[in-house]
Length: 77
Image 1 (tube, rainbow, N blue to C red):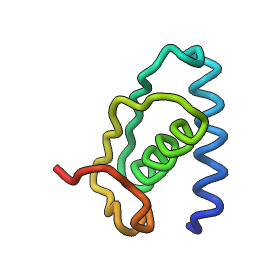
Image 2: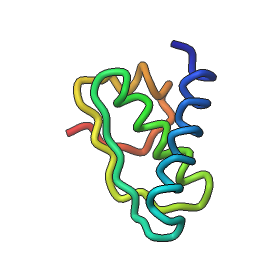
Image 3: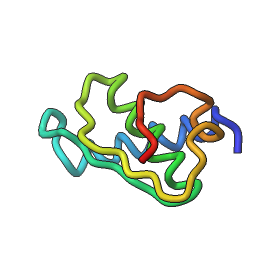
């Protein structure tokens, strides 16, 4: 799936998160498995771009270099 589509999906999910957990009540915790992990990482970037604090991004069985295109400050553990 292309980055553009993933980013749009992440923006939609970030809006949903903010609708449930009030803006400013972070830090926000997001996670996902496989492609969902790529989306979760992108959601974290979107939330940070919008000025929100992200406390944890959990990515399970995803290759961050492929899904993030090298745009991350996350550590591989």
